[in-house]
Image (cartoon, rainbow, N blue to C red; front, side, top):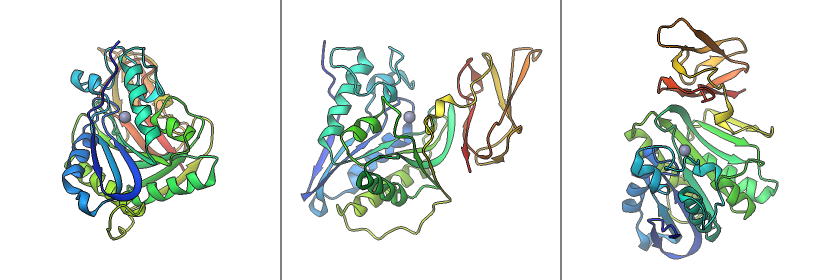
Length: 297
Ligand SMILES: [Zn+2]
């Protein structure tokens, strides 16, 4: 069994913290990959305090297929800390988990992938250690996306779970998706990473003017588990009835799933009050796949 070697760039400056930035944990999330390459060209090692480790495409096996997951079908963000002698995703999970444990801070950049759009957010786990939690709040705030979202610390299998267990402050981000690589997302991701580096004392950079619109902390058990939300009642064609960031309340129509002739038609209605955080944009949907997610509040 061949161990996985992640394609990694390391920029080393003087003494300081070690920040790890991950992209492409899912193989169809492109802003992260482009942003990390731009960040590498932007950061001057001579002006860097600390060490920056960059992995633009963590899940190369999935990226080569142009899919969220590799051929074993496992979600890398549910497979950490993995298994060195397991399937390809389990071995990638093992390799990336080792990288996380070597770092002092983690940023994991995501997007909605081919199937979904997500309103831009920076998220973190509500860590029981207040020093870790406070560092995560600072990182998420200065990353400066519209939503800052703290969620349950009980979710496992993620890069953030590995960081949680090692008490390494960690955030993840989302930016749109739909199989695009939004240039604005690339810029905002690169700037967000630079803002976090400045917050950690790694570079000099003025604090940004805040663009945060919502700050939500939700400690409920499954908060932050986006894939559980609004599963399709059967495999069919999903037509959304809302747009991203629309405000909804219980009973509001989120969309409709139909069969090929439109004879069978089932509505997906909100059971929450809040804003539409994620919305399916790839209309073909399989039974149980998420049609949308609502950020409560
Ligand atoms: Zn992702």
